[in-house]
Length: 178
Image (cartoon, rainbow, N blue to C red; front, side):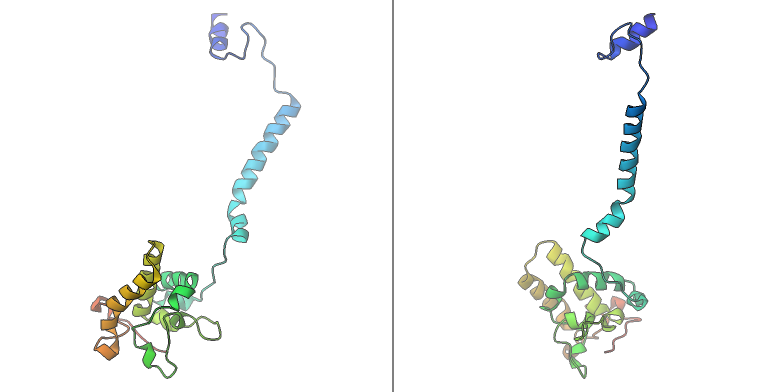
Protein backbone atom coordinates (compact mmCIF):
# COMPACT_ATOMS: atom_id res chain seq x y z
CA UNK A 1 0.00 0.00 0.00
CA UNK A 2 2.86 2.39 0.76
CA UNK A 3 4.36 1.77 -2.70
CA UNK A 4 1.06 2.56 -4.40
CA UNK A 5 0.69 5.76 -2.37
CA UNK A 6 4.29 6.75 -3.14
CA UNK A 7 3.74 6.18 -6.86
CA UNK A 8 0.48 8.11 -6.94
CA UNK A 9 1.79 10.98 -4.84
CA UNK A 10 4.28 11.81 -7.58
CA UNK A 11 1.54 12.22 -10.18
CA UNK A 12 -1.11 14.76 -9.11
CA UNK A 13 -3.60 13.50 -11.74
CA UNK A 14 -3.97 10.09 -10.10
CA UNK A 15 -6.06 9.96 -6.96
CA UNK A 16 -4.57 7.90 -4.15
CA UNK A 17 -6.14 4.47 -4.07
CA UNK A 18 -7.87 4.88 -7.47
CA UNK A 19 -7.60 1.86 -9.78
CA UNK A 20 -5.66 2.40 -13.03
CA UNK A 21 -7.69 2.12 -16.20
CA UNK A 22 -6.25 0.45 -19.26
CA UNK A 23 -5.90 2.51 -22.45
CA UNK A 24 -9.04 2.30 -24.51
CA UNK A 25 -8.90 0.80 -27.99
CA UNK A 26 -9.84 4.18 -29.47
CA UNK A 27 -6.98 6.00 -27.70
CA UNK A 28 -4.51 3.26 -28.64
CA UNK A 29 -5.52 3.58 -32.31
CA UNK A 30 -5.19 7.37 -32.13
CA UNK A 31 -1.70 7.09 -30.62
CA UNK A 32 -0.64 4.52 -33.24
CA UNK A 33 -1.99 6.73 -36.02
CA UNK A 34 -0.17 9.78 -34.67
CA UNK A 35 3.10 7.84 -34.35
CA UNK A 36 2.69 6.45 -37.89
CA UNK A 37 1.97 9.91 -39.29
CA UNK A 38 5.06 11.31 -37.58
CA UNK A 39 7.18 8.47 -38.94
CA UNK A 40 5.78 8.93 -42.45
CA UNK A 41 6.33 12.71 -42.36
CA UNK A 42 9.93 12.20 -41.25
CA UNK A 43 10.61 9.59 -43.93
CA UNK A 44 9.07 11.74 -46.67
CA UNK A 45 10.81 14.97 -45.66
CA UNK A 46 13.71 14.70 -48.13
CA UNK A 47 11.60 13.78 -51.19
CA UNK A 48 9.14 16.57 -50.35
CA UNK A 49 12.01 19.08 -50.19
CA UNK A 50 12.90 18.17 -53.78
CA UNK A 51 9.52 19.53 -54.92
CA UNK A 52 9.82 22.80 -53.01
CA UNK A 53 13.52 23.64 -53.43
CA UNK A 54 15.17 25.02 -56.53
CA UNK A 55 16.39 22.25 -58.80
CA UNK A 56 20.12 21.60 -59.04
CA UNK A 57 21.30 20.85 -62.54
CA UNK A 58 22.60 17.35 -63.07
CA UNK A 59 26.20 17.65 -64.18
CA UNK A 60 28.02 15.18 -66.40
CA UNK A 61 30.82 13.15 -64.83
CA UNK A 62 33.53 15.15 -66.63
CA UNK A 63 32.73 18.08 -64.31
CA UNK A 64 34.63 16.13 -61.63
CA UNK A 65 37.83 15.95 -63.70
CA UNK A 66 39.61 18.31 -61.31
CA UNK A 67 39.22 18.28 -57.51
CA UNK A 68 37.08 21.44 -57.22
CA UNK A 69 35.14 21.00 -60.46
CA UNK A 70 31.85 19.91 -58.96
CA UNK A 71 31.91 22.69 -56.37
CA UNK A 72 32.77 25.28 -59.01
CA UNK A 73 30.00 24.23 -61.41
CA UNK A 74 27.46 24.09 -58.58
CA UNK A 75 28.22 27.59 -57.30
CA UNK A 76 28.59 29.04 -60.80
CA UNK A 77 25.22 27.68 -61.98
CA UNK A 78 23.56 28.93 -58.80
CA UNK A 79 24.99 32.43 -59.46
CA UNK A 80 25.06 32.87 -63.23
CA UNK A 81 24.11 36.55 -62.98
CA UNK A 82 27.18 37.21 -60.83
CA UNK A 83 29.39 35.16 -63.19
CA UNK A 84 28.21 37.36 -66.08
CA UNK A 85 29.68 40.45 -64.37
CA UNK A 86 33.17 39.00 -63.96
CA UNK A 87 36.02 38.69 -66.43
CA UNK A 88 37.89 35.42 -66.69
CA UNK A 89 41.67 35.56 -66.56
CA UNK A 90 42.62 32.12 -67.83
CA UNK A 91 43.23 33.24 -71.39
CA UNK A 92 39.85 32.21 -72.79
CA UNK A 93 39.40 35.75 -74.10
CA UNK A 94 42.03 34.87 -76.74
CA UNK A 95 40.06 31.86 -78.06
CA UNK A 96 38.67 31.85 -81.59
CA UNK A 97 35.31 32.50 -79.93
CA UNK A 98 36.37 34.53 -76.86
CA UNK A 99 34.51 34.32 -73.58
CA UNK A 100 33.19 37.79 -72.68
CA UNK A 101 32.68 36.79 -69.02
CA UNK A 102 33.27 34.02 -66.51
CA UNK A 103 29.70 32.85 -67.14
CA UNK A 104 30.72 31.74 -70.62
CA UNK A 105 33.35 29.40 -69.17
CA UNK A 106 30.46 27.44 -67.63
CA UNK A 107 27.57 27.91 -70.05
CA UNK A 108 27.60 27.90 -73.86
CA UNK A 109 25.51 30.53 -75.70
CA UNK A 110 23.05 27.69 -76.51
CA UNK A 111 22.48 27.20 -72.77
CA UNK A 112 24.33 23.87 -72.62
CA UNK A 113 27.04 23.20 -70.06
CA UNK A 114 30.46 24.31 -71.29
CA UNK A 115 33.31 21.83 -70.73
CA UNK A 116 35.92 24.58 -70.49
CA UNK A 117 35.76 25.27 -66.73
CA UNK A 118 35.96 21.56 -65.89
CA UNK A 119 39.60 21.62 -67.02
CA UNK A 120 40.55 25.13 -65.88
CA UNK A 121 41.54 25.87 -62.29
CA UNK A 122 41.49 29.62 -62.86
CA UNK A 123 37.82 29.51 -63.85
CA UNK A 124 37.02 27.26 -60.89
CA UNK A 125 38.94 29.38 -58.38
CA UNK A 126 37.38 32.62 -59.64
CA UNK A 127 33.83 31.25 -59.38
CA UNK A 128 34.33 29.76 -55.92
CA UNK A 129 36.01 32.93 -54.61
CA UNK A 130 33.33 35.21 -56.08
CA UNK A 131 30.43 33.22 -54.64
CA UNK A 132 32.13 32.96 -51.23
CA UNK A 133 32.42 36.76 -51.17
CA UNK A 134 28.80 37.18 -52.29
CA UNK A 135 27.67 34.76 -49.56
CA UNK A 136 29.60 36.83 -47.02
CA UNK A 137 27.61 39.91 -48.10
CA UNK A 138 30.11 41.64 -50.41
CA UNK A 139 28.70 43.86 -53.13
CA UNK A 140 29.26 42.79 -56.73
CA UNK A 141 31.54 45.77 -57.42
CA UNK A 142 33.81 44.73 -54.53
CA UNK A 143 33.78 41.14 -55.80
CA UNK A 144 34.74 42.32 -59.30
CA UNK A 145 37.59 44.43 -57.88
CA UNK A 146 38.86 41.48 -55.84
CA UNK A 147 38.71 39.05 -58.78
CA UNK A 148 40.47 41.57 -61.04
CA UNK A 149 43.21 42.25 -58.47
CA UNK A 150 43.72 38.57 -57.63
CA UNK A 151 43.59 36.93 -61.05
CA UNK A 152 44.56 39.56 -63.66
CA UNK A 153 48.28 39.00 -63.10
CA UNK A 154 47.80 35.31 -63.94
CA UNK A 155 46.34 36.06 -67.37
CA UNK A 156 48.59 35.11 -70.31
CA UNK A 157 48.46 38.64 -71.74
CA UNK A 158 50.15 39.83 -68.53
CA UNK A 159 52.78 37.10 -68.58
CA UNK A 160 50.84 34.67 -66.37
CA UNK A 161 50.26 31.00 -67.00
CA UNK A 162 46.50 31.30 -67.49
CA UNK A 163 44.78 28.09 -66.44
CA UNK A 164 47.22 27.41 -63.63
CA UNK A 165 45.28 29.79 -61.37
CA UNK A 166 46.27 32.91 -59.45
CA UNK A 167 49.23 31.08 -57.96
CA UNK A 168 51.35 28.39 -59.56
CA UNK A 169 50.65 25.87 -56.80
CA UNK A 170 48.02 24.17 -59.00
CA UNK A 171 49.88 24.50 -62.30
CA UNK A 172 50.62 20.81 -62.69
CA UNK A 173 47.82 19.02 -64.48
CA UNK A 174 45.92 22.18 -65.39
CA UNK A 175 44.68 22.23 -68.94
CA UNK A 176 42.83 24.83 -70.86
CA UNK A 177 40.91 24.53 -74.04
CA UNK A 178 37.85 25.95 -75.67
